[in-house]
Image (tube, rainbow over all chains, first blue to last red; front, top):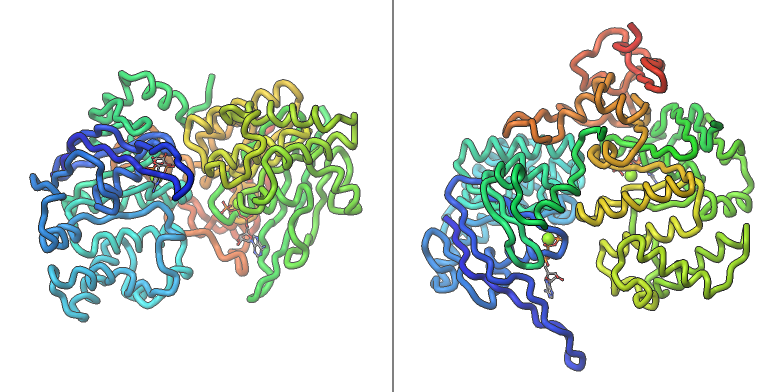
Length: 263
Length: 325
Ligand SMILES: Nc1ncnc2c1ncn2[C@@H]1O[C@H](COP(=O)(O)OP(=O)(O)OP(=O)(O)O)[C@@H](O)[C@H]1O
Ligand SMILES: Nc1ncnc2c1ncn2[C@@H]1O[C@H](COP(=O)(O)OP(=O)(O)OP(=O)(O)O)[C@@H](O)[C@H]1O
Ligand SMILES: [Mg+2]
Ligand SMILES: [Mg+2]
């Protein structure tokens, strides 16, 4: 479904007068994500995870390399085809407190992508409201929540609103950038279970970014480890966790705080 | 060994627009030298207010201490004159606050901020020179894992990444060699490798100086790996406390059990994670008796009265009617 070939992303930094060396955030990254699977991307802070997500969403332009979505090179799509595709790739960002506009009602937040993509989705105002109510029900919120505002919800409920917003265009690929790291374990469990359940019902494909290895282990079929912009290891989740091949993977796994009392 | 910190029957009210919320509802906690206490619980349960109370940093009003005492080395913190308290803070009680924006002054160099804390701490014991304090600052930054620490002393906070700023705050809390460190979510913003490094540093200081730590965190993995003891809080109460080995291996309170079941450990199959149903109570109108009862699968008539905390094995205390049997 998603194939990334030799992707490199270099940021040129510095202003008019000062030259700072360019930062290569991604170097020759290749990976492929199959339809219906959960693909995990892990790596320490600054390793390039969000940059990769931004390249897939075309919020950043790759310096070189290709991103293929269902076999088509995203850089070569016509603007119309690109708009159509945008609706099929959605994203849930990290912070449920910062990522929802506090002045918009839940209804407006969730239907906004339908308004943006109305040319390709073609729903009228009433259709959009119906769709929003149906999606909210799928994430465990009721029609009574439609006319409330973000501050009236808990962190877990806000993250559900973020997920509803991402699902409303009926995407096939969902990018999740640290979707649970701002949440309590109890709320995290609710959100993870919701994601598992939605994937089973809707056949979604997940591209899941996290530095929380226990979350990745729980949710992902395959996982890739990014280190300073380079993929150092990738494979089935169980294999990586049970028999890591690369020293960096082993270091990361050893630092993972497991809920096991030592000794 | 005598206690370094004793919190006894602490009740804190918080005045808000809609009335007074009963945010701490009778906290009892004793910390001895060399102990590392994890304080865990869902958001809003009163962890930060408990930590802030120890050096009397909760603003009153809107807060009001309704009952209880906090003894630090035998002195009642809540009754102390402000001047005495200022001597305690930084020197005897080091603090790492949860809100990172309130901590570093953006217009002063990192090194100067550390040096000032070191000098202030030393004023109350052996005096040190500014040059010695600067050396100490560089060593502390190095210990918290800032590369080329000495050469970064003249940087300003904005030249550090978020994770690096967090480590500066940790260095700042430790530079006065406090006997008690209160660390509120100190590693939440850090990735696992840096987190492991910082936790190892804290353990080293505990072994070296006998410092005691109150480590406030959401992460039960961090508690299992780094703490000697744990207190589990729910809606303003400590519902269970004891040695980590006792509480994490054999939790007795249904809330502790539910928190542990919500963690995706290696043995949990996909989709089998147990979330906690319901949400934390409104502290303006908390349920009478056990505040967890409305979410508890074992709730019964007896839960309408606040359960006393009982000792189920040495040092392991549980506030639940199930433990009373
Ligand atoms: N717009 C930009 N200009 C310059 N450098 C950038 C830019 N965006 C990212 N970088 C750099 O690229 C690298 C990768 O950043 P990225 O945000 O992808 O990391 P990440 O893996 O998502 O980290 P985290 O876990 O902290 O979110 C970092 O060194 C960062 O400083
Ligand atoms: N300055 C304040 N004014 C009013 N209410 C407050 C204030 N500080 C805290 N509270 C309330 O007191 C309760 C306990 O807050 P506290 O900050 O101790 O929670 P916490 O356990 O540290 O949560 P978190 O894990 O989110 O940091 C919460 O209900 C909070 O809303
Ligand atoms: Mg990121
Ligand atoms: Mg707090």
